[in-house]
Image (cartoon, rainbow, N blue to C red; front, side, top):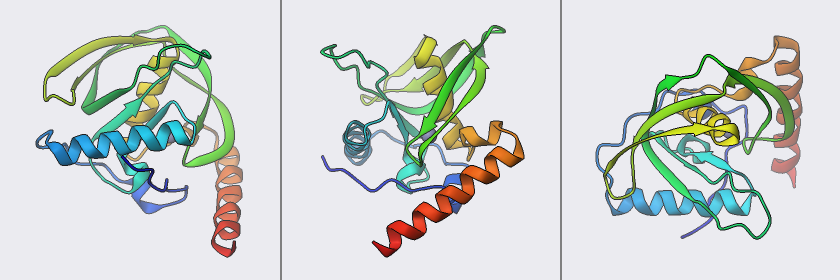
Length: 173
Ligand code: ZN
């Protein structure tokens, strides 16, 4: 497994609708492994393939944050929200493609998601609390949506300007 560079917003590849994964083969399993390693290294609790410039419908997550708790890595191919609760929940969200910027986002508190796992098996499960927010945030990435798209235009522009500056500084370093 290897750690891969994460794209920083603004980048046209973060605004694309990704294509479904045809087949969960060894290449795709390797990619999922790399994504998990990259996510843990960052560190983060979720990562979507387009954040590595790969425009395919694959996300990884592990929302276990308690120190010493058993990790719970998940790789979801072609994930799809099939049901969402009317009840909403607000979490302060961040994104590995938008470093060190955080904002409250309101989303359904619970969602039912179906996906294909690393063995190619069809799965369906209900997610709640932080897992629900994370899975919705990551699936949004597959449709070119970032959490800042839920903010007002002024806040979004301010964050985008900071990211342009950050990218300029990193390019110079
Ligand atoms: Zn993100």
